[in-house]
Amino acid sequence: MDWIRGNTIGRGSSATVSVATSCQSGNIFAAKSVEFSQSEMLQREQVFLCTLRSPRIVEYMGYDITMENNKLMYNLMIEYAPAGMLNDAIRDQRGGLHESRIFQYTREIVQGLEYLHSSGVVHCDIKSRNILITESGAKIADFGCARWTNPKASAATPIAGTPMFMAPEVARGEEQGCPADIWALGCTIIEMATGMSPWPNVNSDPLSILYRIAYSGESPNFPEFLSTKAKDFLSKCLQTDPKSRWTAKQLINHPFIQEFELTQKQNQKSITNSPTSILDHGVWTFTEESESINSIVETKSASLSRRIRGLWLNSRAPNWEWEETWITVRENVESVKQDKNVTCTRMVGDDLELQSRCKF
Ligand code: ADE
Image 1 (cartoon, rainbow, N blue to C red):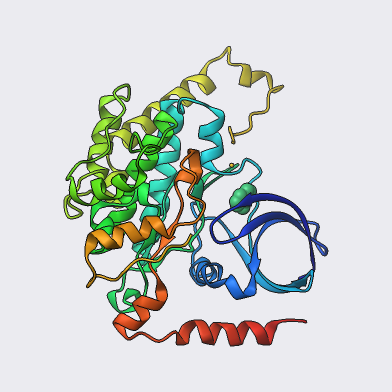
Image 2 (image 1 turned 90 degrees about the vertical axis):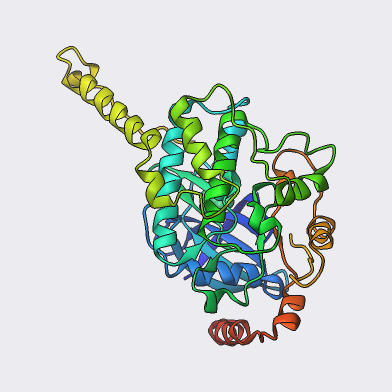
């Protein structure tokens, strides 16, 4: 497919995102691009995205390799979300989103997680920065840290994610399964409600956050002003014991989601049934409200505290403000390979396949 790259619309830990246009159809999409030699995360994302299909997951549109400014680039094409990411919406709203929007996005993210987990995929980096807001609602994006739930398939996958959103068992390097996504969802709800990090005082001492998550037995504080049902929902997400955390399937049936949904439907009904409703005049059209590092750590055999220190010290862009605070980190794949005696045949295989498809 021939296409033209437009403006840069985002920069993440794994790639730069540009708006792009197909020369054949004129359709607009987003191209996530990075130099081929550094495209491991983006290729991982492609492997996951091409198997997933759900209204709650960003749509995969293909990949290709281009030569730009004498550099070989790997490009992953996904749907373009004009409203951008959920963290943009939170930032624009300063002080947090209204509970009705928190409900809407929470419901949609839980639906996405339910689909992912029942498809055997753990996202591993849920946060507002990885949620796209489209005309049809919130969609989960950025699968660069994702892993399969199947223990065989995930054995070679290093622990990854964003420290501030890491579940205690992940921060301790024990496991990274579906419950870790649910913990991160709880943190994302706090982000939506407060417009701030789920852990206070992070600017002063970020390293202590990792220790605190791993060893304190604490959960982030719940925003006082949320409804009782929303707080109860949060308490189900932010259980420190992953076995006690609710699953996405259970959360879909939580009263916060169910009753809010019912109220919304009733409100909708009473508007459309009203004989004096403005909808009856046929002059109004309604559009849906829309809004848009890697690290080196040691493996399990190393001391946990050194491991956590590694997560922090080796993360790039350590600017502890707003979303720069919430960087994605990954275990050092090399050390995992060495320690677990894992070869990298899958990536080598993919590379060969990609190069044979390369037009240049
Ligand atoms: N930022 C990152 N990915 C995006 C996308 N697909 N659409 C719009 N903004 C984005």
